[in-house]
Length: 313
Image (cartoon, rainbow, N blue to C red; front, side, top):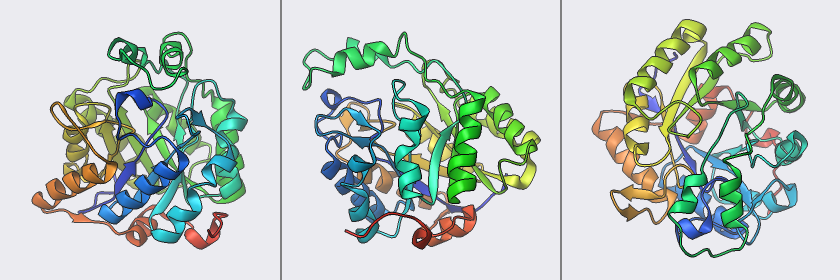
């Protein structure tokens, strides 16, 4: 791993798993997503990881939806804009790449495999729904896997990476995803230095046991040596424990309401910015420095904001 005392903090402000009925603080509309991203950047996040939603909170792949908040984020912050290519399991690969290929961001997420990505248990905890689509949406995850086959991964690397100069946050939900990534590295489709994002605690992926994080880093070290840098988080209550441990190992940190709607036991986070402030306080207590957006660009070899297609407001 490329180890650093400067920690890149990423903020994932809404995602496509949590539904509006889970928290009144979850950004739902495009305008709310834009506001949440600006606040997270102002709190110290060098990267904002962005999904889009329609006005009723349904995940949206449409560039037109992203266009309702991306210009504001670009105008009001210098944060690295990271556009998700994950979206929802119902989306085609063309859907999932539509916004990223339109706006050609500096960074985009890329899930490294097909997997069971189950969050149906949310339905057991919700008694009243804000929107009629929510219950069926979460229950569908029990029977509909997230599909990202090798041909889809290669298509993304070529279309978005080679075609647009976008680099990737390689999301690895299990040890096998590291070996999948190694396959594309060996074929020359992934260039160093690259960012591996370890994701723990998703039902269908690797569990949120802290020993698993250490093992994933050890495995990545064997596969990639000094060609990669690392970040990690756990979905849910172990969010802060995992992202702190990632930094202790010389890697980076990700927080945000996409990953966890709480700030403490039984206390909902009022924003992703609140979580950014908390992790930055923890990291500084460990003697770590917080990377600025431009330092993150240099560390990740990004092409720079000027080379994107994100329009002015």
